[in-house]
Image 1 (cartoon, rainbow, N blue to C red):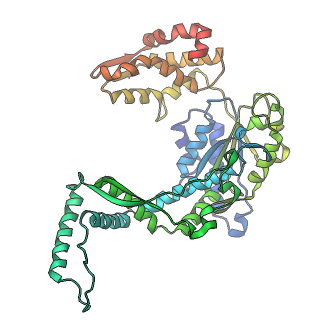
Image 2 (image 1 turned 120 degrees about the horizontal axis):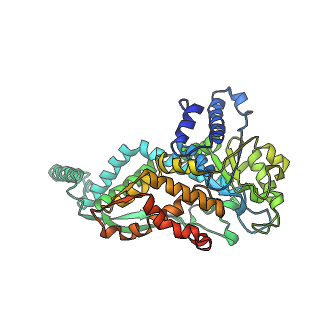
Image 3 (image 1 turned 60 degrees about the vertical axis):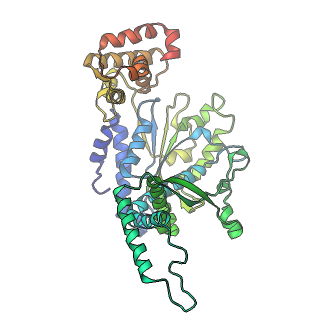
Length: 452
């Protein structure tokens, strides 16, 4: 984080998101402020609240992508939720606290993977020993004392040791990969769900802790090839090494200090939208339920209580039918930074198709190259695709850059289907090819509404 200055963050975001400089600057500053807060004295650190953001703009302009790339850049726990799926207390549906539980679960998974990597060498060593025990079981009575207190003969023990070392060498060289082994695997505890999609965790109940050892964990006998067994045994040994208390503690800390919640479609719960669309519940009630989470409260999860005071919330919405001022004043006050994202036009579409590291004109040829088909895009083809996307967005609903996906799928429809039979061929996508695939559909408005 120390090296992630706002300028560096914006540069990284520019690799995947075209334009929207104001929004990138806002999230970059918000992220940098997190690092700055960590450098403050303890008594001041808790007083600095995160600067939550509202992104205002039509669909397909990069709101979600900016937030997702931001989280990936900092390896922060990130969750995207739609505000419209939450319901007011008293209705059947998901409660707002579930997003914090999901975020904590995600953080725990991230921390667990990191600890597994840290313990990889030791876990592999222990898994190797278990695998050798399965491939070369010890003889009956090996190592046990007789009536006189004497153990088995040294020669037998030495012979077993030499054989085991030979097996170890063969295993490391991959000479035993074609063998099968059978061993016991612990079953996962079943998840218990109640009516309305609610689970036991939402009720604050951990059934296993409540019932203690009344129901011992079950194991299942499984047969698998040596490489697969080694992976599974390594994972089991790694999980045994990890201290669960340390894991849960670190996951909660990661959630509280680094968590990012992207709250999409927040305009659908604004009061002005009431009666127009969405579920038939009180939108203002959902806002009131969201308010304590954004303000800062404690949410009970199965891994421990999580404080939401320093979780960064990024809200987003098109705000066609409502305005940010239609939200509750208290909720507005918790989103002090507001940025407007611009609609995308012809120039932006050309840049989106060519500049990002994950550009579509790179993805499609790469996919078809796996079939032995070489596809080349000309510059005039890129301009033609961008022109058609801008035209269709003007004639119909403006869905931003997502229109490029529908158009590219239309262009590659036949090539993708026939690619397995076209190995070795070279195809050039030029402006004429694009026009031939799209002109009739775009000119027929009724048809384009269904296809594009």
